[in-house]
Image 1 (cartoon, helix red, strand yellow):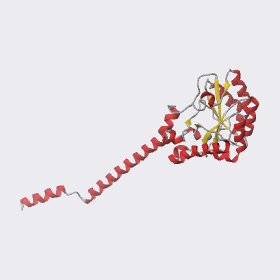
Image 2 (image 1 turned 180 degrees about the horizontal axis):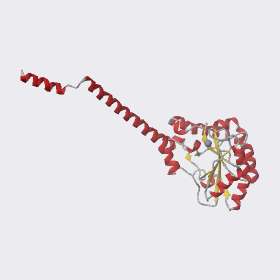
Image 3 (image 1 turned 90 degrees about the vertical axis):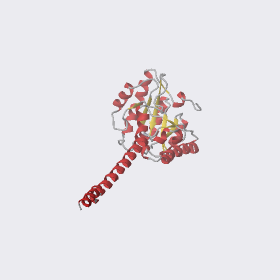
Length: 267
Ligand SMILES: [Zn+2]
């Protein structure tokens, strides 16, 4: 009698009550959930965030300035825009300044005459994207198509062979770090950006640019206000300050060049 009760009580020690087993299953599920969440966060970081630290902060795998000669490159993003780009081309032609335009494919389709003018008036035309989309949020295939489609369009309709890709807002994903992820194009950003997509007084824009001017500077400006985040009318101020900026930059002994002066085609 005495022995049986001892065995009974021992077996009770090893029986896990139902509530306890439920708790353990719950803990296990929470842990698996945490692991999955951690993995998703890690993948997002690796795909969307780290590549941008890599190119924007460490400036690796990207061109952001030219050689240290008394030359600077003027570049314009987001066009062609029917309201501003024609007048911008007039100013550049008047001053005899060559520039590089990073165009949006669907806008080039809407205003082919402006892309034609860029070509005829001695400017370089390169790829900004088919639409102005945030590349870190695009799948590898969609991100690649943004470059490929624009490249094809510019080649087939305008005879332009593009080599450079400046992704919208200068943001890329992990796949764009590989040449295949950007249809073989070289990645480029800038060394001087002055917030010209906001309504900033012309003299303030000019002051900011002149303050940061260095040999080999790549200046980015915008010839459209249709992009998300830009203020309506902002390019008016760019157009207003450009003639005097050109004059003052030249007075400092700098020459304006296209990217192919620094990196000849075929190099
Ligand atoms: Zn842009």
